[in-house]
Length: 166
Ligand code: K2U
Ligand code: ZN
Image (tube, rainbow, N blue to C red):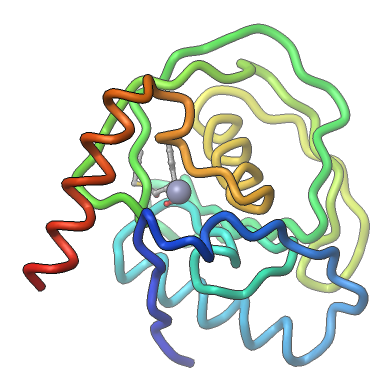
């Protein structure tokens, strides 16, 4: 396994639209393992393949307390959503930035699991937020795009300076 490099905002590669996974093969399984190692090391509770510069529809999530319950969603699609909830979100691609974002409170998502088997999941609360946040990454969208242009530009300037001073 390997820890992968996470792209930092405003890297343009974060705005790439991910392609569907055609076959859940050994290469995909290896990427899932590397993404899981990367997410747990960050630490984070979710990670999209886009963030490690792999532009396929694959996200991983672990909202468990013990960080030992990995959820893998391949080619995820939200088929039902209801309600609204505000949550203070962060992002491993925008380190040190936490802002309120409003998203659907409850969702039903259809996806393939790590064996390539179809499944349906009802989610609410933090899990629903995380799934929507990660699925945005697959569309090339970063959560700061929900903020005002003024806030977003301040964050962009801060991130560029952070990377320059590294
Ligand atoms: O996409 C990512 O960068 C992973 C996020 C997932 C996430 C975003 C917003 C709300 C919940 C999860 C990272 O895990 S950010 C770290 C974090 C951890 C717990 C709660 C909120 C944010
Ligand atoms: Zn993120």
